[in-house]
Image 1 (tube, helix red, strand yellow):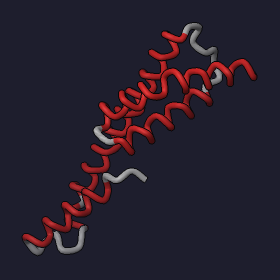
Image 2 (cartoon, one colour):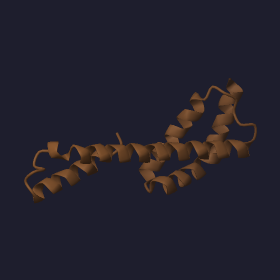
Image 3 (cartoon, rainbow, N blue to C red):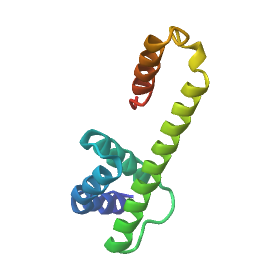
Image 4 (cartoon, rainbow, N blue to C red):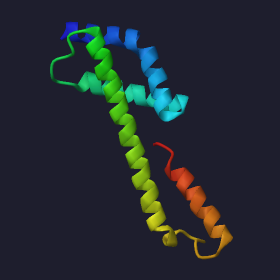
Length: 115
């Protein structure tokens, strides 16, 4: 168990800065990139199976985890946006013309903020 933790800690030191750069490319945001990398490390720590044998394989595995997490966030954001657009008539002020459009856009912006 201790060897496993030591190996992962080594990956954090070795892969961490490059992982943040990759995540920044995927998300376009420094804050979202750091959140994504943190989430990826949690996935690595929670993994029950065998760890990759080499540092190169570990790096590829971690980058694949980052990519999958980013794609999952994009899909979630699209679903959220679709639901908001589908139910926009329920948004107060949506039937009043130009103000309703502004309310809908504001609601969409707020809904895309990650909690």
